[in-house]
Length: 549
Image (tube, rainbow, N blue to C red; front, side):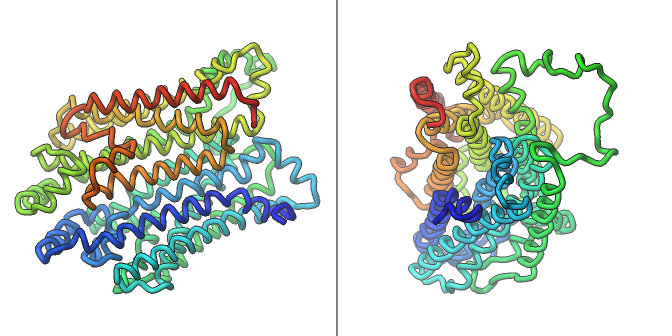
């Protein structure tokens, strides 16, 4: 049945993602909704929580944070947008990815027009997103009922739908960008950079009310205007309509460009945006002497440069912005820190025990650094699995190159990218701290930015290992689910007073709080050892398996 048309076949390939993201995100909401009564046990704790939330208003707008729905909405804030990773990757894959694999030529040789093929694939992606929304809404409703939060089924479903729409926007951006790139990984990398930029733009008006016009350029601003899990706030249907209009514009533009360009080629840029071309002879135009064609490692580096640069700009810019935010709120937080045991406990659990409140606060935000770096690594591990699935490695293995050579070259390029992102982020934070006058320990700052590299290597090695048995979509979905689970354990677990034994199940636990307390050498060695084991197992599996099996 599922092979009868393009829509059903595409939807069938999304079945793992639907249940993975839908159930995973829904259960995250469910657990926190049920745990709110254990967090707010006394009137003093409630007052401390409200005061604390107001001090962090720039991170997420605090509305009825003493209620289960308000606390959950504030707790996750923009972090729940990690779900946008799936449409971000899918949007670049459904058209451009199929062109790379040569499947689009075969598909268009059947009695299907370009418009029909594109619309059916987009419809399947949106069906998957709305299915996730239903799962999230139903589970959130169940959690709200258990917590007596007063959340109706309609509002719970609207929460899921609002989340699906904002994720669909980033899928549309990825689809549109893929019309201007020759490969899907560049499109997903550029869209990932847009995601981080839009998160920062949305924060602007909460830091300074005069910057609200700037925030309106971010689609996340309109997503946040609805807070369906808070009965007293509800849904802003006007904001949802704005998001839907943006979706229509993005997807219409993407389809219009797709049906007018050559398959396998990009949409030509306007003349004023094109780089000037020099007159070349045929011999000069041939890429025989191109540096990226001199070895497998060089080619792997070249393929990583474009998405890597966008992720570097996004991650380094985000944490430089965090330095500015911490400096802006330092005085008010110092006063609150002196009189709020709740804030002291929170920062010590997540950010470490450094007596300087600015350092402890920034250390808390550094939990996001390995998460963002791991997210980039997931996209690269997905590209490795896709290259094998798309038949790209067969031609390469027909040359006098051993499998281990190819494996080491690709993983080596990923390692170089992780080191580059970490070094640029370190430089960006150090320069911003110097400009703003924020006092940071240079040794701890270096440790905090460079010790994320083993975290990226670990999930990269896991991705390469999983690709030995799993298809690209399942491999990417499983890695994304692990990342979501680790974030939940690390970020939510301490506040819910989970035992330390539970926290050990998260790879992020081994990152520690190096900005506040220095480099945790033992934990670093443990995650490196785990990375080495996964890397060795992945290499062994790759040398023994049938390609594309």
